[in-house]
Image 1 (cartoon, rainbow, N blue to C red):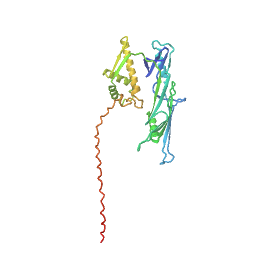
Image 2 (tube, rainbow, N blue to C red):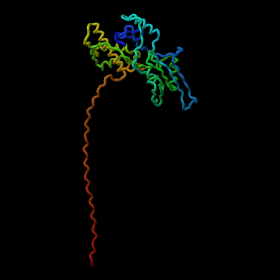
Image 3 (cartoon, one colour):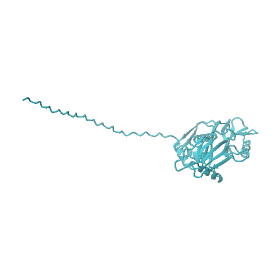
Image 4 (cartoon, rainbow, N blue to C red):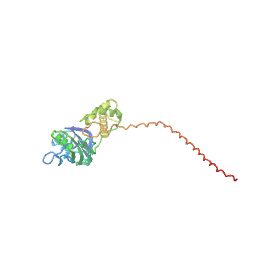
Length: 320
């Protein structure tokens, strides 16, 4: 099984040892890339169309089909093989492979719409437009070494124009976000981490705001600075020597970093901003209600009975 102890980085790819087999090494996926067809051409097609009648009700639009992948280039795999072959304790010939992923999801970020296959855009407010109307395709990647995912984007007339011009100019208007889970063995630690989450959040918000490719390396540096400022305290309860003490401190901070990445950050086209406005929910004090005076009901006056007029008696005639 993959062991998280003492990872190495080769050409930007993180590589781990196996906990039992000294000839096996595991590498994590690298950057998301555009897949290629069997003939070597990029797996991308953009079709645009115009309305049959100018000025009619029907507008133009477009369809964009593409495939993404996490497969490493052969040159990168060769560098990894060469590096791990020289590691102390490695048994030749070495075997390198991605970890067996337990489960995973994939999302597409296309201009103004993000989601897995089957995501529909909400109607555009009056006076505006939606560039991407619908995302069709994968919700789960192929879960192999390549981890391919195919998408089909339904574009509005404006979205098709934007997408076509972006591709011609070499821009990247589309992104794909993978979320993969795998099993691994963590090193044995006996540490206590105390963190003032409000200070940590404020520090990260200030340092990561607007940073496009900051990501994990920058986050680790920011946490080291916060640790030096006293916002994070790592206490190792049991250790054998100074080297073991430093290793456990490093691992504890690494685990804390992974926790923050999972809890506070959401992958988007512009990473580097915490996903939630507040990392720790602050209880809202319940305001003491101002007592509203209960109105004293005005007594309804008892109606005075209107006297019934006594009819004047008709005089009885006196006989003569």
